[in-house]
Image 1 (tube, rainbow, N blue to C red):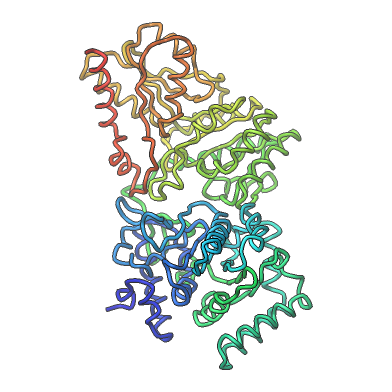
Image 2 (tube, rainbow, N blue to C red; image 1 turned 120 degrees about the vertical axis):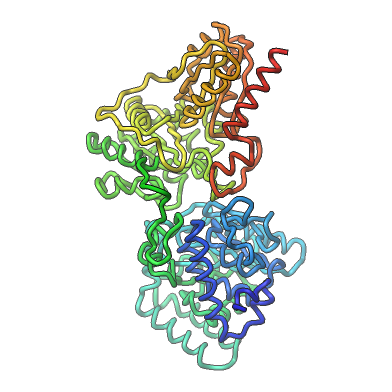
Length: 631
């Protein structure tokens, strides 16, 4: 029996001898590599925290003690050590365990997450609650160094010492987020790590702790000596300016050393304490070490080479983000005022193409979506044409900026919103199912979605030409593979496209779901004898009310709306409102995602089946509504 097979919970981790721990770490890495090679997932972040998670579970007692992880995409090791190893092969699959921490999945998951910057704030809240209740549990929050570029994390640091005295913050410093970290904080940490005087002093103290007996007393002496001497050796720690005790940097792959420092931190009651831990992203798997950006969140891959696995035959259609990225390069080449902005998602958003070809027209703000959007507003107010590439789910964080800084001032910022719709493997925190609802009621916002990559190019050209706040949403995955015109056209604002003429039922669809609408129209026309029309809506705002009302006046019996978005407050709601405002009484059947958080699944098709959002479900729903109208 392997060591990992003997781990049913944290007590079993504590029962292992120190000599067995390196073998356990090796088994965990092998399990993570094998599972993610089949299912995809966050490979590098998890391989980097194996020893840290082992040490945490040897020093602390979950679920009584609370371990929080920023983003929590590095939670695989924690899952393996808390009773989920037998189900780990189901990671990110339909009905399987989540790729993130999930309070509904295990009592050991103290706090769910999916976006950066939340762990410190939530941990401070938990520690304050503990103090108020008079209980004695420990609260430990782990963040990556990239989280320090996130405003929420800095706000939490500012509040930590005023809210509680017992709190352990762990900075997992691997010098990477998804892409290479940028900005002053990253440079500060690098200077702190590489300062030769501090590094030598740290090494001397570490050697003392390892060689001499005395346990916690020696550790405490060394820690306090370092704290007192640090100001004479290097610039004072940023964290101690927040009245947070700083210890480090320390080797994040030395389990014994980690246990010593964690034990000391566990007994610190005078002020919050931060351990600066140095790890190697992807440790133990050379393809992940050599290509950390790819293996931050990887598709299924060949273990021997690290090459991405492909289905039968080569994929002809580009990914949506790459289609956008190449289009942006074409526009930026012709117009130097066009610039691209990402919040630490250079590859995922397709802006890697701009960063390579026109680096002076590319900006990476780090994980700071709010700043990225206000930064874009400043550029736009100064005559530039910023294109902000952010996943739909992450743009939610900048909602206030969208309203007050961009739309209120009518600034020409173009948002290209990747992952609008379902992101099946990642689950509820990453689905982009709410953007139409949170955007369409904002004055001056233009919201559209292309059916294919050629129309995406036209929409980007339209946005850059109109000079108004514009939001273009598109899904994850492959586009349609259609050729792109050499010269894009400017689409008339708020005008839809009739793809199929019809008289009885009009299906209004957004984005690639128009192709589903065409299939439904053809099949139901044959089955019912009714005439079905299909409209590529293009614009969620402004809606093509003229076409809609002309169809209503022409005797349409039923409008059907289709959107890869929640039906609550979305495109279908906009159609209903437009008809009601005009006094038209034609009924509307809205097709889309239900009013609930959608769980992760192996594929979009699996999720659509589970939540009854397939073509067959839609056909039944339309047929049922037509039958009710006829009765």
